[in-house]
Image 1 (cartoon, helix red, strand yellow):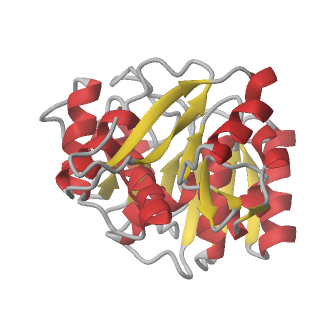
Image 2 (cartoon, rainbow, N blue to C red):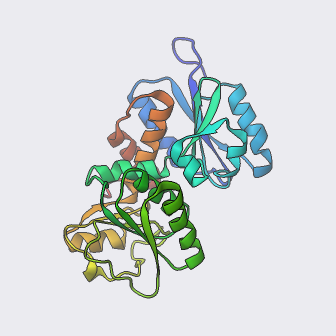
Amino acid sequence: MATPNGFLPELTGSISQGAAGNPTVAMIEAAYAHHGLPWRYVNMEVAPEDLRDAVRGLRAVGFRGFNCSLPHKVTVIDHLDGLGESAAVMGAVNCVVRRGERLIGENTDGKGFLKSLRAQVDPRGCSVVLFGAGGAARAIAVELALAGAGHITVVNRSASRGDELVTLLRDRVGVASELVEWRGDHVVPPDADIVINATSIGLYDADARLPIEPASLRPDMVVADVIGNPPRTRLIRDAEARGCRVLDGLGMLVNQGAVAIRFWMGIDPDSGIMRRALEQALGLAGER
């Protein structure tokens, strides 16, 4: 589609398998429209066996960048020209950026979280309790470590997976880390500054309970949940009731998109416009 001045728009987009209904489209296109930019964001279904050809095609037609979702976050690396710092540590990419003729893999999962967190607290020197050791936890932990977090406690049911994350944090980023096996309701230590649910508990279920002892949450803690739908999870509500400062997962999703736009375009988009578009796309308008 040509723009009113006759020039073709700059192209960005997303590749994944199971791409239908991706709400990122509405959020990013709303930002482009708000800023009067003739850019488009195209949602694309790509099977694993077609990934190589898809990346070659996006390179050939001049895409300025694209997001990668499951199942391509790791396998896409073989088709890129380089990696950003945190993506190299994590070994996973969710955002590809064209820099000259090179396609560079970045990871905005943790960067989006960090942008939200810094509105509440600077993580430098902080003690963090992180629930989970999957992809979201890995991305968040690496960004927190690179931002200077003082200590990260990984709380996870699987000791082997938790150990993998702790070892990565110690060996690759040099942050003090430990694993606590998750057995029953976890008691958050009183010296914790930041508490994060990076599991899928609460996704699509506002009453799902994260197995922690709510009374161990203290008013001086920042409590964050990666769950974006619904944004007001039970953890968020329990933390608010204890007087904690809270961060919902919708803010993380918005900031992931904002970071990607900054990578591609060099501007900081209006995150308020993006959040409203995302809420509408998810049927969450008015939830805060």
